[in-house]
Amino acid sequence: MLLLGIDAGSSSIKASVIDGESGVCLASAFSPETEMKMMALNPGWAEQDPEIWWEHLVTAVRKCLSATGKRKNDISAIGISYQMHGLVLVDNERRVIRPSIIWCDSRAVDYGKRAMDSLGKEYCLSHLLNSPGNFTASKLAWVKEHEPEKYNRIFKIMLPGDYLAMKLTGEILTSYSGLSEGIFWDYEENQVSTRLMDHFGFDSSLLAEAVPSFSIQGTIRQEIASELGLPSGIPVSYRSGDQPNNALSLNVLEPCEVAATAGTSGVIYGVTDKRKVDHLSRVNTFLHVNSTSEKPILGILLCINGTGILNSWIKRTAGKGIPYDEMNMMAETIAPGCNGLSILPFGNGAERILQNSEPGSVISGLNFNTHTQAHLFRATQEGIAFSFRYGLDILRETGIDPSVVRAGSANMFLSNVFRETLASVTGVEIHLYNTDGSVGAARGAGLGCGIYASEKEAFTGLKPVATTTPDTMRIEEYQKAYYKWLELLEKNK
Image (cartoon, rainbow, N blue to C red; front, side, top):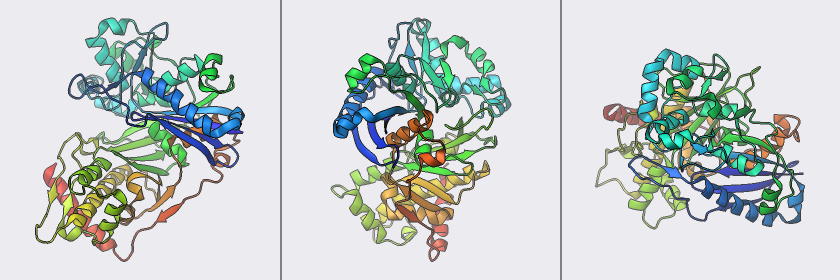
C-alpha cells in the first residue's frame, strides 16, 4: 500500500511516494529544476499560469513514479498541498480565464481595507476571525472591478489546489479549510459569509462545493492516469494549503501544538480549539485540516516576511563564495549578543506582525574594528530568531503557549545557532523531523481514504531526528540580546 503526495508551491511542484504502513518515503522528485517564473505586469503584482503548474506536476509525478518502479501500481490514494490564497478562474468549459493571482500579489490590499471598514471591525474579527485583507475574496473583487468581461465569464473560482484536483479528477470542489483561507467563511454561522458575499456583490454560485480536507474528492480520470503512468480510479482523498499541510506533516493537529518553517519567509502555525482573535490583526486564523462542525479546530498563522531572505542576502553580499554550512560554523564561534551587533530582518515588505509597518532591515551597533564576517552571520541568525520570539509572544496572547515547536530539518533550522537562539529566548524545545509538504500530503491521503484508522496510526514512525533545548547556562545572555533587539525594533517601527 503506497500513497502519493503532491506539494504545489510557487517555486516548484514536488511529488513523493511513501509506504503507507511504515511512513518511509520511497521516492521524491520535483519540477522544474529552476524556480517557476512569476509574471509581474505592474509593481506589487504576481501571477502564474495554472497550466504551467499542471505541466510541472505531470513531470514531477512521472519522475517520482519512475523511481518507484513497478510498485507504482500499489498506489492507493493521492493527496494535494498547494500555495495558499491564490485565485484561479475557470469558465463553464473548465478553461482558465486569466493567469492566477497568487499569494504574494498585493493589488487587492485596498479592497480588503474597504471591506473591513464597510463590514465593521467587530463583524470581521468575530465572524471572519480576520480582516478580509489581501486574500482570495479581495483578489476576486479586484477582477470584478478591473476586468468585468473576464469576471462575467467565470463559472467557478478556485484555489490552486482545487484547480489541480479538477485536472486530476474532473470534479470541481474546494474544502472548508480552503473557504476559510480565502476569507469566505463565517465562523459564527458555520457557513460562507453572506455579508461578505453581498458586500463584494459575488454570486454564491461562483464558489465550488466544499468537502472536508480528509475525504474522497474524486478519482483519477482514465486519460490522466495514462498521462501520469498510474492505474485509473485512484482517489484524491486530501487537499490543503501549504501551511496547514506543513503542520499536518509534523503531526501538529491538537490544541497548543505548534509548527514552524523558516525558508524565504518564516511561519509559526499554532493549533487551537478556542476562537480568541488578535484585535490588531497581526495573525490570520483558518479552519485547520482536521476541523469538523462537531469539533472546530483552528490554525493560527503568523508570517514573518524577512527571514531566510535576509540570510541569503547576507550570503550574497558579505559571504560571497561561503556555503551556508560554513556560515553556520563561523556563526558558532561568536558569543550570543554578537558583541553589541543587532540586525532587524524586516526588509522584505510590510510586516503583518508589525501592523503592516515596514521598518526595513536595520544593522545597529556595527564596529569596524571588532566585528567580522562571523559576527554578521550570527547577528543575522539571532535577528531572525528574535523575530520568531516576537511572533510567538503574539501567539501566546491568543492562548497558544507551546512547550515544543516542531519543524522540518531544512533551511534556517539546519543551523545550530538559529535553533539554540530560538530555544533559549522562547523557553521551548525545538524538535526537527525528516518530512516535508509532499510527504505530509501523502499521509493526508491515507487519512482521507481510510487507510489509517486514526491520526495516531498515520504518524506511527514519525520521530524527531534532532532536539534542541534552551541553553540554561546562557539564557541571560540571550535574553539581554533579545531585549536590546526589541528596543531597536520599537525605535524603527
